[in-house]
Length: 142
Image: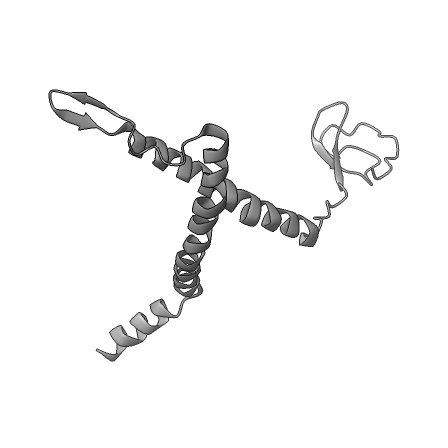
């Protein structure tokens, strides 16, 4: 029984599980901010331009059933607004920050080349090909 508890403890304290829990909590808190920016700033701008801040009343009726297309329009607009806010306020700045802090990977200089006669791989320092024994001109490292 103690082995199972130790294994469960190791699982719970894994970095991925803890990071996921933190991400969910921060995401829930951030949702309020994004929703308020959307409702308090963006939707009134859309209302000022389009004349209608809420599309809930838009729809049509077939056989006494009302199809509320306005709800779908509101959901699509809210999704696009939230996606834009997340992209421009989180993703774009994080990408720029990561690009600045990313270390450039160094590419090692090649140590081999191809024999011009038999196409086998040979050392740059070789003066004769070990496969076809052709004499080679001295190679300079690129």
